[in-house]
Amino acid sequence: MLQLSATFTNKPIMSLRTGARVATVASPIINPNNLKIEGFYCQDIRTRQKLVLLTQDIRDIISQGLVVNDHDVLSEPEDLIRLRKIMEIDLQIMGMPVVTVDKHKIGKINDYATDTQTLYIQKLYVAQPLIKSLSGGQLSVDRSQIVEITNRKIVIQEPLQPTKAGIRVTAPVAS
Image (cartoon, rainbow, N blue to C red; front, top):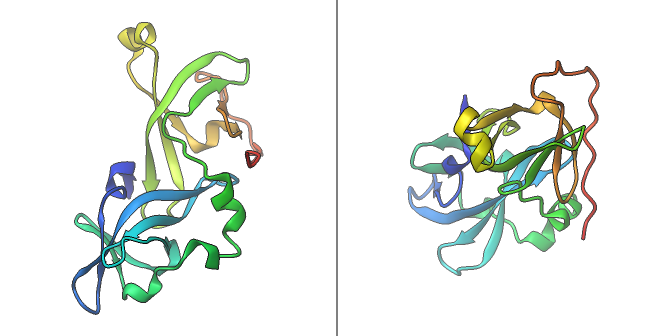
């Protein structure tokens, strides 16, 4: 099932063991190579410390928030060596410009939909400039239309063109 980005941000992280809130989700950690949410930055309820919740530690996603076994699944960012490069890139796709291969400006990302089973971002919702939005409204971009992701923009196929098989997605350079 697809869920919008608001499903995850500012939601509580609940412990199955205690039944209490252990943290609050701050923002996702998005892998720029495949648009998978690898984890979430969160704020610990007790210490107000910035911690990371890995996606494999999430037991369930419910309307009230995320469910984990216990507080012990939260890690300090510097302890996650395999995720370090992705965290350094710090891809924040909200507000990122979207352009076509032919350099036509489409608009900026104002939301995205994530598959709750795999946590891959499946759709990007692009707010078009005022003049285009009067005639066409909001544009939905499927992940298969993405050609390239850089640290400044997302490049997609022309909206009315068929997509090609074997599209490569390149990772942005860490700044």
